[in-house]
Image (tube, rainbow, N blue to C red; front, side, top):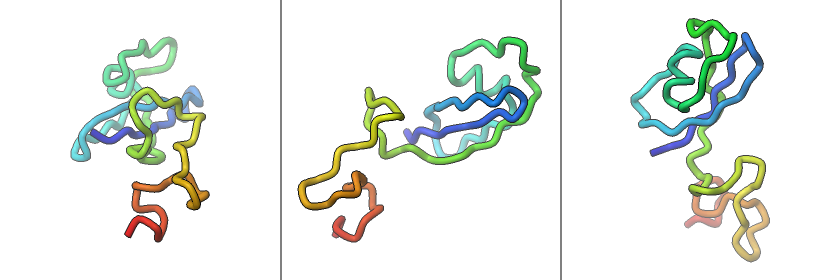
Length: 87
């Protein structure tokens, strides 16, 4: 299941969640429910925006730590189809 990053303009928070490609989250309340967090003081109806797919991040890897590059590659995204060395 891919990982997606969403941003809520009402509170400026970024939240990563995993869901299938067909699922669409459109509100802060939906995002909080999926992420298992409380909405706090932010209106649950506040819209959220999906920013990027971070499906290349392995489970247990922190988003602030880029994936390791294969020897000789240098870009850190080997195996994701992001470089021409993936064959």
